[in-house]
View (cartoon, helix red, strand yellow):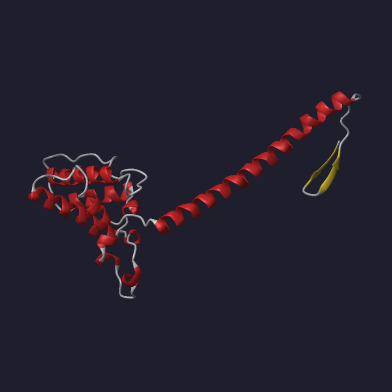
Amino acid sequence: LRYQIDGHLMRESLGVSSEREAKAEAARRLAPIRAADHVSTLRALTGRLKDAEAVADAAYDAAHPPMSFLAGWAEYLKTDAVPAGAATLAQYEGHWFALAKWLAKKHPKTVAPAGADAAEDWKPENHPEAVMLRAVSPEMAEGFIKSLVESGLTGQRVNKYLQFLRAAFGELQKPARLAGNPFDGIKRRKQNG
């Protein structure tokens, strides 16, 4: 049996007498080498596929920028989930932008500066409207809810934030191209504190 590994010619005696036995023994001995080559090929193709998907996603995002909190609020106002009462809507808007402000301050990389806004004195915490919805992770959502608790809000008040934000992100999941709702896994707080 003759074969090459990394450019080195290898020779082995198969220890059989018939051509049929020789083919079977060669196939048995070469199977691990061929399988390894196949695995290497698939790994390389998988890597190339992931790279191509990343390039395609980036091109799509360039043509259709990710939704910001400001655009998300405008989109939310178009949904059937908007409350009828002006006072409730104002409260929801406060909840929405409280999260945006918290994210801009605690997680400034979630804020995408745009054009002229990217001046040298541009600070993410001054532009919560530019926070990208897709940047909000479940850990960030949990952190925001914890910050509300730590600020002294009652469990009932924190639950109102949680209920609204869970519903709003649910409504915006498809139009904002969210991978999931970051508020889904967060448990409600006890009502009395």
